[in-house]
Length: 300
Image (cartoon, rainbow, N blue to C red; front, side, top):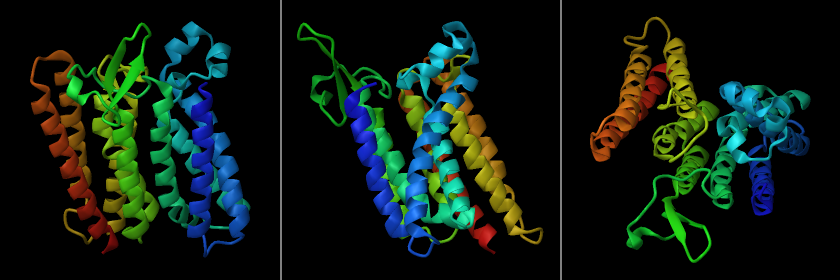
């Protein structure tokens, strides 16, 4: 694995731990909670990223060999959102070990977690083409941070859309919003908005091993499942007396169907990409609106 990537990730984890310490002022055993979240999150993040990849790509794993896959340090054999799940699990375990309530600990950690998610995306700069989009042939657009240059030697460089930078910038925005705006249900809302833009960013990626039947991108699907789960929870929390309490969840399912149609159109038809991505962006805006509506209903 790229040494620069490891150094960047380690430094990012330390920065995140510092932010977490500042946010955990009202928690029991603050110092220990921060340290355990750092250790458990790092260990379980790696383990879960690998295990989720193995579950998703079981056929490739059996073909390549289970031992070889498990010991591989290639980031293409990792699931980013499997890693996110591992970090969340680490935060929960740290809360249990220090006598804190899990949801309270997660709410305190949420902004720091969003920052870590953003920095982990920025770190993909050191991983060549792991998270890039289509090739950019217009020389006027061949510059970083818009594009990532890949040097193939003999003075030949190919430039690709730097999708990881878009992911990282979105993560920084969610970090700032979570830190300053989200007071109630901070963890759920932070994770919702971390997942929301990833639906289109996953679509922009040029290549992803975590794909089923050619156009079903699994991590894009994982993001949508989480989004739908949050909308369903809002409906449950709203109570039976609330009118149309499951409307956001129903609209979420409709948007999921639209996204499937968009991915099919991108892969199997000649529709202009500007049209298909405009439809996807409209769907994301609707989902954001439904989150706001569902959150208000849930609070009532």
